[in-house]
Length: 354
Image 1 (cartoon, rainbow, N blue to C red):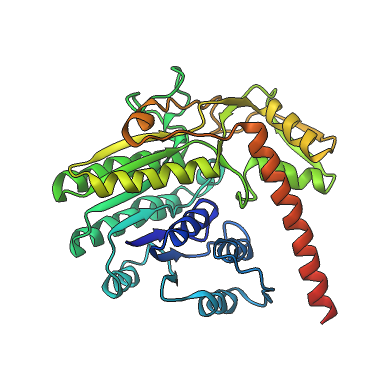
Image 2: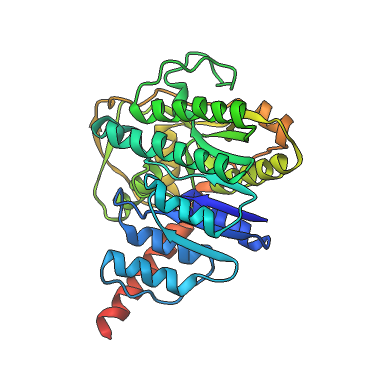
């Protein structure tokens, strides 16, 4: 099968690309290597996803990304350094390749940054998605998976959160763009018979996790022996979902779409296991064997009190069954984190010695 994966050099995207390639599929990855965080992280993600452990010599962003593309493009994997806001350039990709399905993971992520940059979030998360749906319509692509978010639930009073719950009260621009994407996706399903699954991810973590997310950010600060910003009293809680379980949910969604027509469904992909901020910190610090130095701060605007996924629908529809408990997932993450630190240190030292 031929798949277009947007955001395929990101945290979730690189794991998905790795899985698809291992199963023998052809993958086109469209990623703009956004400056939301260091572009070099996405280069490392991409290299890890194809098992390329050779040293990469960094110089300047554009030339580095083009060098990456030249290094790894093959008969089964193509990367395009492109922004989904650029409709004309996206169209050229659709003209060059025939896709059986689009898996749309690219987005501007993050609740707090969206409060500062709402217009940009609208342009990427809504307009960018519309570009993809329009191209699917034009080129006759009938299968589409879209990444939504647990943030659409806002401060939902009912727990666990179910897909049938009313989600008309988002509390951040990011959440609003994700809810808008669900609605607009249904328009293209209704008008153009685009079969679609919208997957609401619940706080994904694991190897390659984005450095701005709490688990990775806290691990980095502990490793550097710096203060950790600790918002609230530690009782806010998240349904942390390990990356392998998310990838399994996406792959089961892919399989379901290939075998069904007339589909538009929203699915929660979570662990159905709630962990408080304090419990997360305690587990992480115990695994790292570091005592955290906390800086107590008030809760931030846009942060929800709790997320908790009802995953019954995903279990029944696609056979989703998460397997990784939080303690195991943190252990694997810490092993990756420490190994990553060691490898980058050796790479940096090797570059200095050359």
